[in-house]
Length: 327
Image 1 (cartoon, rainbow, N blue to C red):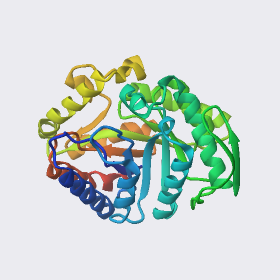
Image 2 (tube, rainbow, N blue to C red):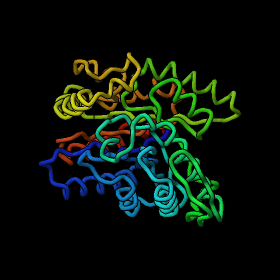
Image 3 (cartoon, one colour):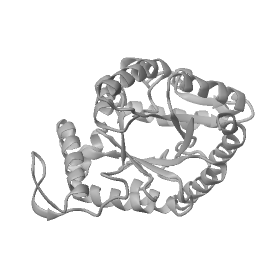
Image 4 (cartoon, helix red, strand yellow):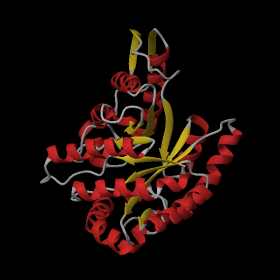
């Protein structure tokens, strides 16, 4: 089992941006020190967070050798800009960049970019197609539904050939099958619960086998560790409650399986989503994912309003008390 750190989580508008960045850089250094495998972030446009690609480029200097991963809302990108930025990050990371393209779901992001949400799947596919052309061809001609270019130079090549590893981020069954057929791996959402994951891992493995692919399953999970479960919940609860209520109000339930709704009481938010509690309780919960064939857990242990020191202590304690059990 590999472990990564999700550097995201968002900030409240009144929080210091300088302090937020300092916390992320320290988290990257701790990840390197304790032997975590990867550092991840997402495209949190208009979320009072940091630009994903710029943040990863910065933290790479603090944790050389770690894999860098990013959830990218491909429908909002122009393929030329995306290809250039992603190939640059692949070089910065020494060929250890993973792209997790996602469709996106927040209406205000599509509205802000002037992209019709009903076009998101066709844009998703076309951006990915054009990026691959830009990475592999010296001259590119493309005339599609959304983008057109005539005999333009290719983008700078990534170190990985023909391009970075792709883990498709998907919540629904059809997206899971798409990940099995068209990508190197599948990234499970932090909103998915264990019963949903159990069914979808079987679906993914069957579809990958039919496609002649080995596949890879990685999961974003919420994690908070303390000496006791009671202490972990006491520290995390106000910040987690705020975040999940906010996401539910934005309509995220519309993009999730019925069983994974997040407009539910706090205890139900934790159930099947959180690795939370004492070191022993966290170890027992992680073993459930191992049994389902999940190969990497990417852990978020900070939510809007949580002080850096509480999150950093969780990264340390998990590295000290939990990770050695899975070495």
